[in-house]
Length: 275
Ligand SMILES: C[S@@+](CC[C@H](N)C(=O)[O-])C[C@H]1O[C@@H](n2cnc3c(N)ncnc32)[C@H](O)[C@@H]1O
Figure 1 (cartoon, rainbow, N blue to C red):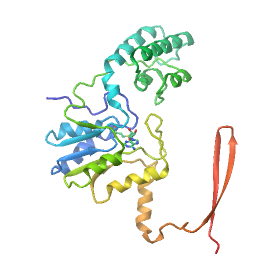
Figure 2: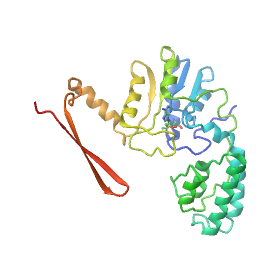
Figure 3: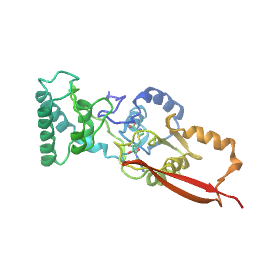
Figure 4: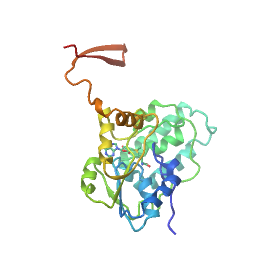
């Protein structure tokens, strides 16, 4: 029996681990589907679970963030954790790491990056930074206060992506490849509006978040969102007010740039249609 992971083997913000068991039940409702395309694969958790539950199906994992690179380096990450356990031996658990010890840790990371070209800062963050704080580079790591939250056991991802087809591209490109098949279920777990996306490789505007909705129309899908993003509320509203269209068509626009302080700026917009 192959191991089934119900959470991603390496830390990943936004992974669907809370939904793993519910998702397995949803899969029972789409037994006729032959292909599952995980457009926003993230850690690959949904792809992994799908393949374990439906070994007969083709499962396509879109690894947009290159999570595989982190998986490939798992051995080196475990070795770094081992060295960290030694460096932190005199720092009480959950206490702040004193400056000289922090310097040793940063030196170790810098050396590792120079020698091997990669350090999994996100994974190391969960052993060194305050809960839910993540660094993706050495410079970011340097800016944070470090704590001794060292993981006591090694990471393991054996067999995690076995038999899954891996792609790495924009979700629209992958959608185009499969859009005309009627035996496909699209797994659509995009970044959520108004939530932290700092560990993802992306910069999205509101229209990007809304564009994702286009892939759902007329297709089988499993879509995820958060109540913080209000997208479902917006769609409910649009569904109830179909006749409204865009009320600003033909309106003129004025903008006013304001500064709250040196790093906080905003633009007030006035739209008017008075003729
Ligand atoms: C909410 S996460 C998906 C989490 C995933 N379901 C899991 O369980 O780990 C959204 C992912 O979409 C990725 N993403 C951002 N822009 C993308 C794009 N244009 N095409 C595909 N994926 C994108 C993000 O980098 C992030 O990995």
